[in-house]
Amino acid sequence: DSGVTQTPKHLITATGQRVTLRCSPRSGDLSVYWYQQSLDQGLQFLIQYYNGEERAKGNILERFSAQQFPDLHSELNLSSLELGDSALYFCASSLRTSGVLNTGELFFGEGSRLTVL
Amino acid sequence: DAKTTQPTSMDCAEGRAANLPCNHSTISGNEYVYWYRQIHSQGPQYIIHGLKNNETNEMASLIITEDRKSSTLILPHATLRDTAVYYCIVNYGQNFVFGPGTRLSVLP
Image (cartoon, rainbow over all chains, first blue to last red; front, side, top):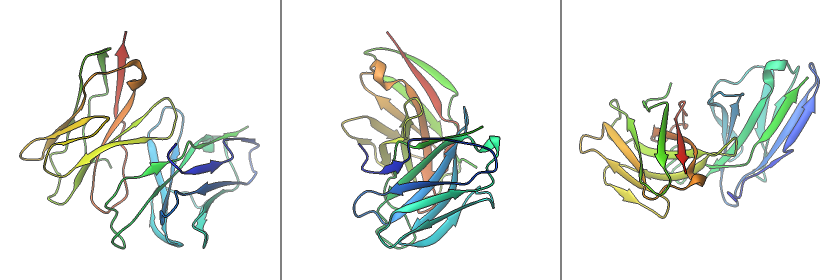
């Protein structure tokens, strides 16, 4: 158990819909990362937050957005869903000890599996 | 893009050491080498990381060449549960970029 909690574990929805994925980081971790992993694909970095502020953006579509709340949990919002958005979405957290730089490892949750029909 | 090159796949006999290589010829002086693994769509799991010196923990050993252009992850006594995709990542303060990794199959 990594200490990172993601909900829901599984989600099935239809094209055009909107969903929200939730992530609770490990206790004390200030940074949250979101990754997408499509079937047989690698992990694609989407976005990172540090202590409530967006710090880095990766290959995140404009239809997707995220935020980190004062209690440090994060939500990833996916809207106007398409079939190709079906994937595993992972959240990871880390403890940043020197501002921007991450000198530690990432701890991943077990993911949310999204199926768009 | 990932800054590392790994074999696509490897096999290892159960009980033997698994040696997973990684090339990172463009690594910069302050970048660490990290290893993660992902077992069948579970969340990736941190294994080990190092900068210059060899490192060992309860899971594995990491051997980094003197010029730091390559490294090897060693699982000393591979078990069937070690079958996974292993990712080698170089990183300092940036976001972790995962390449395709090496699919290790531990065979009985």
